[in-house]
Image 1: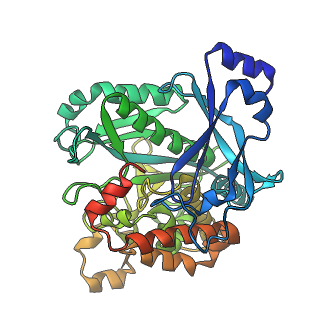
Image 2: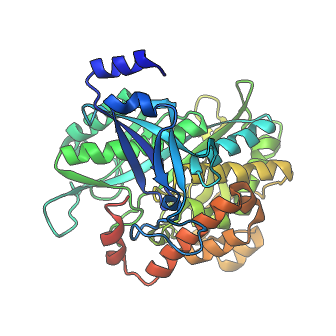
Image 3: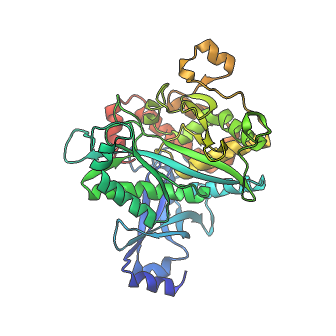
Length: 444
């Protein structure tokens, strides 16, 4: 980036460039540089306290045990490849930041962790293509009650008509930021929506997830509504997931299908999925990391409450998806994930688990072709199907004992992450749903 770039920004009316980071509680934060001082900060970014990676969701204060405090400065250095002007915020632009200290990668940085896991996949000759699939609620404002924007049902065309203007504006804003819209439909809950965007490389997908949340919330606000990605807002209504879709590639060839192998999946795909299943209880401390997450992950909720996989089975924790063009398989979906997860940590941990499956040559059990919640305990035991953690505390115990994931994260990042999420569990484990919603709905 040079003076010509700054000149072009000024001529386009840009006044502030926001440098963003996502902390261990998955709060999107940022500092903005004014265009007149951008030249002085382009290479070295802005300074933030090292303590920012030890802040829980409840308050802006450092949790004990994270190994971080008020002493220590970190530079939030722009990754200019992620630069975008913000169509919903005139005169503002955004760029994602990498955390550096004394010119070196800071081991507490979640975005740099994902870059490291992408490199680990490349060592195995694997390129991953992926996307986050978001569900969210549109809610009315100006009232103490939580009132949905509409009271329609799944895929209701009435909801499409009611929310046409806001959905159109969200889509236009996402497209303007380089995202490709694949599908939109109203989800099962009242006021609940789903917009799917096209897959890309893992780092871009995680950046897109940050941009997606920011865009949806901003556009909703412009329309006098509130958008929330919180997993469970209403006790008796559908929860919101953020499923992770993945495919494995090498030399532009999709490695997922292989008609000559068992179940029509390649050895590479089977081992990757086996790694996900093997590490899933620990993974959930990263992919479903809030107390609220576990109110959604229940049998018969299509949320993947059981550790198993299946073809086109929406109750399996890993769903292998049929390609209608070839009648074979091109991708799979990791279901126990939601938007309270830091996308860099979630994506990186999923890759780490899958790569461990490949390196250990893990194999998968037989697919489950029924709703596992309808099986008896004995039938599930015989089939090797077990129920996933029922609360964040249990998932954190699994993560604490999982050397593969802890080693992938590194001592510094894993220590700070566990300290933050343990603090949240200790503070919120006795919360009723209403207490969680009051605290978390604006955060996510």
